[in-house]
Structures are given as C-alpha cells and as structure tokens.
Length: 172
Image (cartoon, rainbow, N blue to C red; front, top):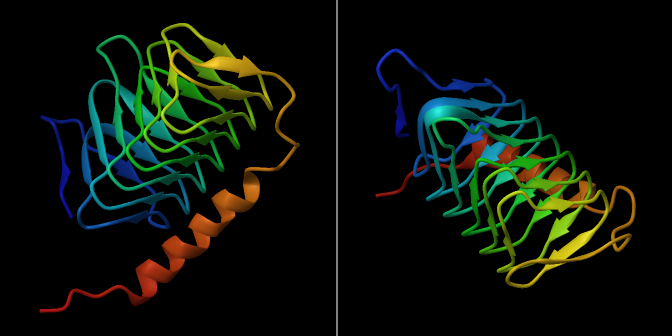
C-alpha cells in the first residue's frame, strides 16, 4: 500500500487499523485503532497534520487534507462517506459525513451530527451536536439526530475492516 514519509515525517498507523492497498497516506497522518481507510482515499498530511480517531471509516475516494496552519481532526466512531473532502476542520465523535460532502477550514461538525450527501459546510461553520446539515451552503436543522444513531454505521465498518484484514487477497 502506498504509505509515504515526507522527509522525516512519517505516518503513525495503529497496527489494528485497516488501510486498503489502494489508499494513499502521506506525511503527518495519525490513524487510530480499528479505523479503516478504503480504496482511493487520500490522506495527505503535508502541513499541520491529520488525525483520525479510533473506529473511524474513511470511505472510497475521500480526500482528507490540511493546511500549513490548520490540522484536520476526525474523532472516534466517525463515518466519512465516499468522495467526501475534509480540509482544516474538526469532526467530533460519532458524526457522519455524507457522500460527496465538503467540510472546509475551521468548520466544526459536532458530536453525533450528520452532514448530508453533497452538502458544503463552509469556513468557520459550527454544526451543533446531533444536528443535520444539508444543502449548499449547508443549512442546519438542530436536534434532528438521536443520541448514538451513527454509532451502528461506524461499528459496521469496524467489522468490515476486520474481515478485509483477514480475508482479502489479490487475484491474478
């Protein structure tokens, strides 16, 4: 799998994490226990750094980046959907970031919140815990999510990561 140091900066990947061979990890990136990074995902930590918590799924073709000054932090039990783009933002525990959504500089997605598919969370936006954010730019609907609602989705990807570590093999 393409895991790259950038000068003397090396990724820190927990041994229990699953990183698909077609994902790309570069530089100042930390990935927590039982997290999964799926095909085509790119985590490019060439600036302030990227932190992925425990039991978090970064799905196919997602792009996680940072800036020279802003880290990107993704908490525990988070699901980041296919084609999503996160940069210089904070995603708190148990949030769900929908397919093809974008979360930009200094935005915060609160614990257990859901960013809907194709939504754009603009610079400095704050999504409260358990809220729903939909649209371009995202509009917030507070109190929309139930406590723990996203946890089951995250746990499904933990199980899937274990299966892939044990059973995936290249053919041909």
